[in-house]
Image 1 (tube, rainbow, N blue to C red):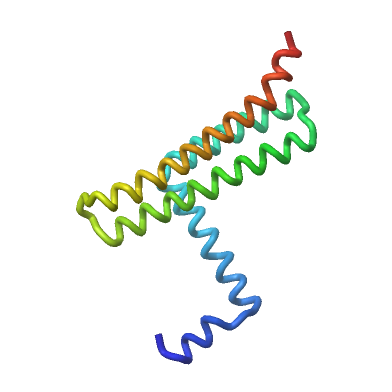
Image 2: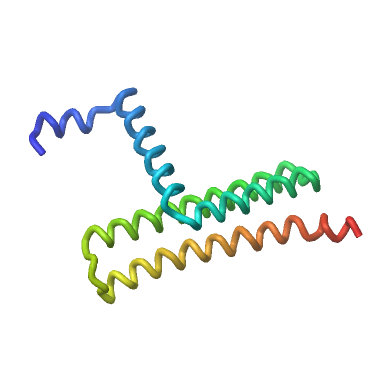
Length: 131
């Protein structure tokens, strides 16, 4: 990259902020168009929101659920990025490529399980009180 391009790239400003926002939206769009797990999480979140509204959970419980789902989304997006980077470097089945992809997937799985457990801790007492 030449020095003039490098200077333009490093300048702070509203245009750069808008460009980074545009790239972030493009990343979300790509992930939702290509990753089945993100759709499953979106459906799960919709179910949790409906259940939370019906059971009238507290503000703090909403905050905890939102944080849990944001963590899941962030980890899923990182998983997608790692998989894309590995695929860019090699298409062959290499043991280290497999480790990178499997560990990224495991991180997404662990965050999903954590979010599910948090939802169970929040919703089970409300559901028990219904009976």
